Length: 397
Image 1 (cartoon, rainbow, N blue to C red):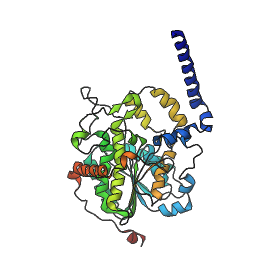
Image 2 (image 1 turned 90 degrees about the vertical axis):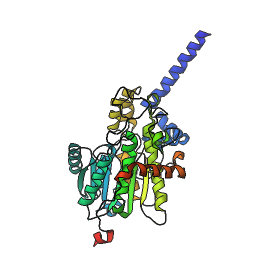
Image 3 (image 1 turned 90 degrees about the horizontal axis):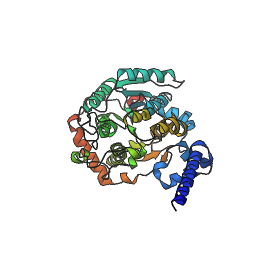
Image 4 (image 1 turned 30 degrees about the horizontal axis):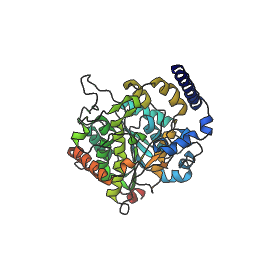
């Protein structure tokens, strides 16, 4: 009996190995529509990698973005891209710059800003705009406010047309070995859950400070993640006791889940929906949306490898990511779609420009509670910034 079970087990292992080999080293499953079928079972998988879109029309293409119509729309507009020195932020800034937009990228150091500026300007085409760099660290409310004050002082000649809330990170190591491993690290400056502040809360503050200086049809775009589907049982914290209570482990390394990261990304989707409702679909033309770039081959995976203990890191880093992930700049395309389409408001998208509904984000009561909680946490930095920008018609004249 035991012998038969061992033989059966060996057969099953062989079959699984053959199937995995087919998945990773042949195009047979793709041609069979296997991945496309999987994405119909779970919205998290929609567009996560190119193979999941095999045979599915893209909702937006590079040809559309680099069309004369889009150039006419964007040329001369102003955009801010937080964390624009690397990854998706760099690709967003590059594409906007190459379509005539005056782009300001924020970085945490002068060196990062200078390196990114040199690289972007070196690739600029015939329709390039202007590129500016400014310092900002989203782990510090004071730094965010300082940036906003400097920006308004420097660029008072034109309203802000686009805000790309892109700066963010994922896995962060606990600095002290004695810290509770179930508690996410906190920011040094403000003592807030690091990922919640860096990925979400500082962008809320940034919006509130720059709100008076936005163009009437400004577009606000959050770089989000499918991790928004994987969060704590309470979805997002709406009080400090819950945010820092450590009632559930924030990191589940064996399933590659960082629930604190997922919370911060779900907060972005909730925030876009809350703002859309507050502005009103009739009385405002400002749009706020979030998008998942997909699994993109960027430096963030090197950071994850360096600070986490996820099994099979080398296989992910050396095989899956280079071969199957989206390559730059395709991860930025959906964000650019949201910058050029004014009829989308309070929505969430996967590559390429495919709307996905996260049921965790549709609760209007949760949206409002998160907004109020965010206001509470940043209230000491909300003093209005003095200054003004010319209205669009004045600029045109």
